[in-house]
Length: 425
Ligand code: AMP
Image (cartoon, rainbow, N blue to C red):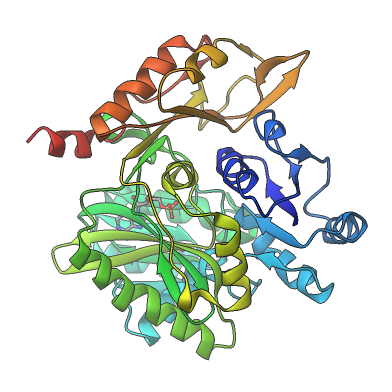
């Protein structure tokens, strides 16, 4: 089978690694890819925002399945355009991708279908939003309605922070994405990422994972795309798993079908485990990055039949098998990220680091020049490992990081601290 993967991050390197391992695959391309992906797939310099160019490529090369990694092409309707050209693509349609591209859309769906989430209101002007937060008080959460590269959410601890966030969004900090703002109740509890593979009607859950959003140790510093993750998390018990499936994921699928936009692809629920039970605080319509990296390491089954079953509405009869051992990933980012950072520094020691037992390194923002690897983005490497315990996986990852020579990089030292604490109880 000929497959084209779209994207260039650590998530896509992990997907490329897993897809390339499938005996069904005869050829794998990735557009645009990165230096690590180039070891698994042939990277092609296609502009993935140009849907006509992607369709032409698929027709010329006989691509039978397109796997879409990031949210931007999904929100732009690439799956719809490929479908019109009779090319099968894994991922939601533009309408179904609204679960991520419009926070207001998702909140209204939750209200209509009784899906547990925080109380909220949608606003089109700063004056009304300000009056509402003043009446509600802090803590409170201010969200730009549209896609804002993971930066459109402000968890305001004080009223002043909430007011500043509202002003910033309505002044156009996120362009059209901030023309509408959703103000949401602050949910307290443990945060987990829940993934389900969906075919429009049915869903099968993937392994559980926990992400670490803040830039620095002890969950301090600015929010980022994610600085590390591990799987499984001990906090998703079988009971919580069943509650999330029956109260959140399945009603969402039913609601989307009723609205004429059946959801096919990976549904990624950001869930807060509150005292009143699991509550949804956001949806994403693709794999999380870096959670995907640990899920791909732990997935025993071939992923390609799973993608095909999701596209074809055949998940009902499907099952996925997982390795029981935990996996952990730590993101190495360029100093300064998520703010300004320097590109172009050389990275050494990757081959030695990858030789450590259980270690796998997925690239994000890297380029290769004359067989050396250079940093080319904010999040640059994902150093991952499996182990018999989370503690062992973590020790292997940090041992590998110790061998990587990149003075411009930094990483958190405390990924999976909650799970490690639990293991030592
Ligand atoms: P997002 O950019 O949508 O991933 O949101 C960033 C972070 O904001 C999430 O990972 C949560 O930690 C936090 N967050 C979002 N909504 C809420 C909420 N209603 N209550 C508490 N924290 C929230």
